[in-house]
Amino acid sequence: MSVDDRFTQDYAQLRRDPAQNTYNEIITGPVSDWATDFSHLEPEYAQNAVQVWDDLRQRCPVAHTERFGGAWLPTRYEDVAEIAYDSEHFSSRAIIVSNFRPPVDIAPVGEVPPISSDPPFHHDARKLLLPAFTKTAVAKQEESTRAFCNSLIDGFAGRDVVDAAAEYAQHIPMRVIADMLGFPQEDAPRFKVFVETALESINLPPEERIERGQALFDYLFEQIRDHVAHPREDLTSYLLEAELYGQKLAPIHVAGTIALLLIAGIDTTWSAIGASLWHLGTHAEDRRRLVSEPGLMTTALEEFLRAYAPVTMARLVKQDMTFRGVDMKADDWILLSFPAANRDPEQFERAGEVVLDRKVNRHAAFGLGIHRCVGSHLARMELRVALETWLARIPEFSLADPEGVRWSTGQIRGPRELPVRIG
Image (tube, rainbow, N blue to C red; front, side):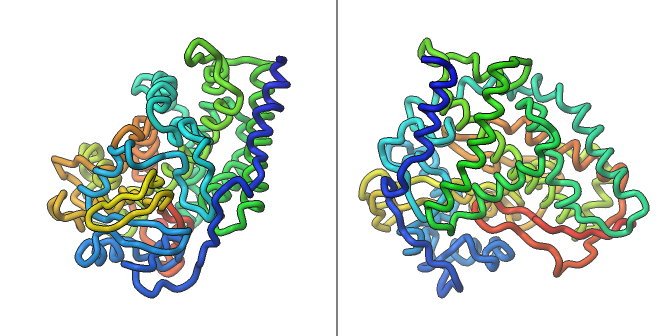
């Protein structure tokens, strides 16, 4: 079979008839009670998530909703951790809560391996990615990342107000991931659309969502074909040459993994950078201390990651079961809110405060269990360089319009609009 035939055959899998999926209409709208009717898609949740978690932790640590066809939201660290480590009872075949569930036979690989993969396949698929995300490999990206951050700030020259999320934070991971994958830099605006489709359009009918998702895979297969024809030293070519169980990866595996790196690698870091700048723009004492004590950056970064962890992952219940006194049904969603776990006062002293010099900080910002983020070194580098460069160039700034800040809805939480006043 020719390479092109393999692409065509594997690509057909993406055009699965939506009727093969278990579909449930999402009910959006005002929440009557967060303990029994939660919805992470509501703007109210995006703006007030910390208060919602605190409330639930006190009166209903595992919340439930009939929306999305049935879903659960644990808010205590120990509960989130137990589910995250339990791959026997909870599947990762779908990690974004939506209005349909992919068929069970998609496991153990999933659509975006390895994060959508179950054991034992997961271990081997994840292992393939490790060499590309070591500290040594990531360090090679630092100089160009710093230069790019400076070029973005150069573009602010003469302006009093800039959008630190839309004009700074979002562009940094788009450039870094494009470089690593060997994709054209001019395609960055398309990456933003792909991210929003994957993470913020889950209320669409499955047919429409699949149609939009196909645009991403159309693009990925175009890039993969180009790399097959013109191999180079980048992550895409590496994946095309990688072998698993004595064979090269199927094109659908390569495309799915690249989709994961493109989407997760952009939105999570974009959100972490933006949330950190939001904190520094609203807490002048922390900003001034970090500027005057740059040696605090290492612990400050970890604290920003704890307090403003952007990522919530999903699991699917494999079989009917009881957990913490609640009866979960097969194929119920579980929202693993690592941000809520990071705010649990039973796990962290002064959990509701940002402590720049916190010495012990075993946060869950990069997840827990077998799916802990493989790109954590890269994310830390991007966050550190982004903040170091910003504070060196713009040591004095504040929110220009607190009411103009908009946080994203869904499973990745971070500022999408962050107008700040320089000086």
